[in-house]
Length: 409
Image (cartoon, rainbow, N blue to C red; front, side):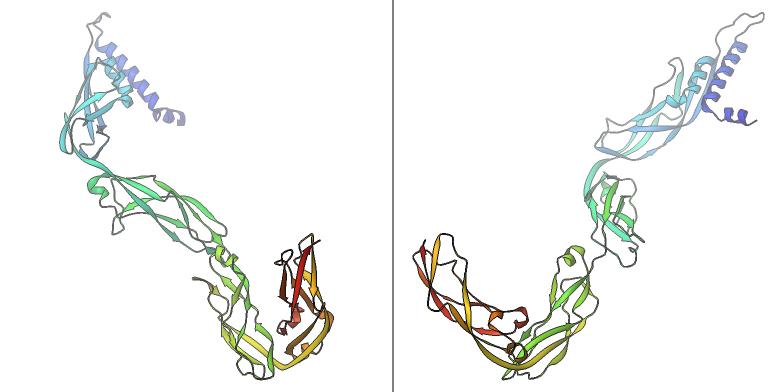
């Protein structure tokens, strides 16, 4: 039973069966008594609901047509009619509007690609009413709407759309109703970059889709970066002003010393530190801790904490003079001999926190002259430059100047 049902549902089988039945009917009708033929019989049939294709100029658009389908009456011999019925799919009903301009026209109907020229083809309507309008095109930038949120702790970056513009084409009156071309992308729960191809839609000012126009291209490719731009950034504190007499700043610390910054990944990655507002120390004679607001490093940044504590350590001031520090030369040019005019050692006076200064020794300090700018045959007076250990960074130095002459060796 199933096999018979499948055969009846097969279009080719039905067409073949119709052709065989038609031939059999023709034989019966045209057979005279005694088996003699009396001639070919002519029959009429109606092919129903055939689509009508309107052919229009390339710069015109078919806004509407009536009717969109019609019936086709065919007549001829049984065999020819049966052949047409079996090959009805190749028949094309056309309303040729190539010779008319904009407006509403009645266009005659013709039948093309007929299976048999021996059959008469008569449409039940000889004309189709066609409304033609000029085709126009307008470019729009794609308006993307992103819905949903990335996975917890992640943020989305700026979307990249390709192509950036879409051309809307169609009848002039319809294209002018288009206010934007929109697309939508859902990134709910995304843990990695999202790249998808999404359709675009021409919409009016009230957000409704405008029918009867075409978008080219009809889709765009959207890439949305999914980022984890949270970085720990060092906080840097400085002071401004002068402590009380015989006191100096011996240290400054920030608690906590860093803050988590979240924002656009490319900006956060380039952020190495955040400078806090300078702490005033004028006339201070003791250690002080102040509450300081952390500046927003860039527009759109989010900080893990808005405030931090800054402690400025104030210590008694001491001064010590260290003798006999050797003077070295740096920046020498090969082939030139340099001669010091004066002492080859320096005497350096250091002021700073008493607990640091009191432990300094001559070997803790480096004294040098930069002779890179002293030309052969010249003599210049240069300041001694001093290098102190890192832990003495708050110490001040009183330098001495020495004359250096240079001659070619």
